Length: 569
Image (cartoon, rainbow, N blue to C red):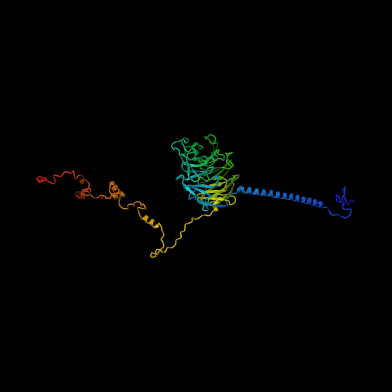
């Protein structure tokens, strides 16, 4: 067999002969014979290699571009979120809820954000259910749990099933979610000077709060200079008592109180302007932290811990707001002055992320509306100011789950601020529900033609209704059980009109068939039946008819002397 032609193509050389055994590679490029067609396998191999290289290059370039864009987007979004979160206030929308016409001095929401409780100086406590309300924003229950005492504080327990009510009375009450009373603290003996010897408070309450770690314990403060810890399992007496003293040794009233987030430390603001911290795990003889000149000698209206637990905000009636670091209580961090406050329950709270401190102001003479102020916690600079309404802003509540702000105003209105995108549930459920009007039953009456002379076959039956019969029975004094009409004339009332004596009144009301007139002589009334009794004896004469002896002497004898005449001179 002849050998085939040897063809070299670059560095690849092949022999198309049948018995080709030697394959050489040379550097010549198509030097022998005509140029044959390239094998199909070699073409496919080169195409695949080039395409794979191109794909790898494109993927790497796309991946680097995508990572750069993603990093830039993340950095920009993080910066935007940080900028928004630092000063974000959910106030794009607002809604009103009318409690009454007096100042709102207490507000509280349960931890889930399903219900809101509001208290006022008009003694009323209103319960609001967001899931059951419509756009009319009406409370489902209003009651007066403490009679004629103004409500000073309301707070739901950590589980949300109980509500602590603090009023101006000496006794606190615990209600359930529907407003029914579950417990009432006892009242102490006001004639005992040692408050530790009494079972309860002897003066009006000032504030109260639940223990955040124990759902069965709560604390109340009073104007008697004490704070008492109570348990739901023992309602007869307190389980612990704390006595507050001023710098001169006399008692002072704790006007505001709050627990730390872990429930170990109690912070109280007193009427002498001092802030006292008590560690409840130790003896309560002396406070663990004391700031004597925290404020001027006036009531501290609010004191609250931050969510992180190392900052403390205090609001006082000396028109100041102060921020404290509990790790160094010698000097306050920041102070904001000229915050006019008319109520001793004005709030100062932290935002859920501890970036802002929120408080309200009352109206001055030259102002038209109360303000809701937001301060930065790092510098205490004013970040935002909202004009609430033409009244005093007293209570402020920022719910962390709902991301909604509730404010209690001096004209009896609860104003809620929320954001359409970043607020959840709460009042957003109510605004979308239309107010349902009461549907009145419409009665369609058909005309009835009365034909008295029609034949019985064509006579139309009258409607059988009980209305006329009910009207007749209503006029009947016996069937309607009408009470006796009042006597409009005379004196002495019903007793004198029926007779001058009690016996005559009783005889008249016994239902006797024959009544005796009071003006008639009783002897004449009896003798008028003498003739009838003699002619027709019925009772006594027939009984003795057979045994009665005959009368011998009747009348006057002839020989009987006449009556003696009167002696005349």
